[in-house]
Image 1 (cartoon, rainbow, N blue to C red):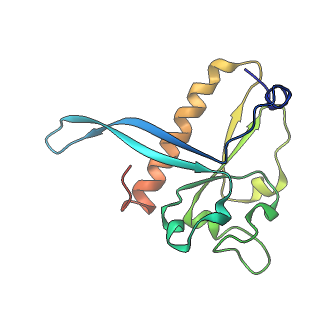
Image 2: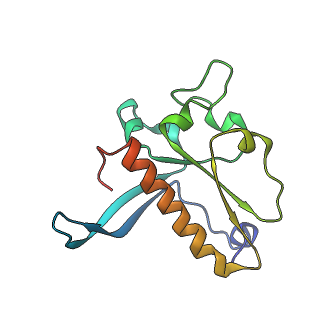
Length: 146
């Protein structure tokens, strides 16, 4: 485990965009299993998205402050992002010893809790993320390939 602070000291800069290639098995008609690769584009600057791109956004990692969503479509006049979470699945990563952000508590956000000391629990959280996202996409974004 390497902390963000250690990475910064090493002079490593965060990428603005990463392409994940997720491999997963899909059950075909008749019960056969087909292994497929699904690309997921992870971006750090969503305001650069074109209007037609927003329908393809499936998840957001929520930090806590509502200002994170300034300039996003579906933002309510009072600055509340609750309508965003009706169209995009929201996740919040936190360490188990951190206090929960008050905004995260009141919003429809799936909290993924990690531990500095129990790294063997990372995999179940990783699997929870994909399971939650897959269920959401079946219900709300079934037109996308996943």
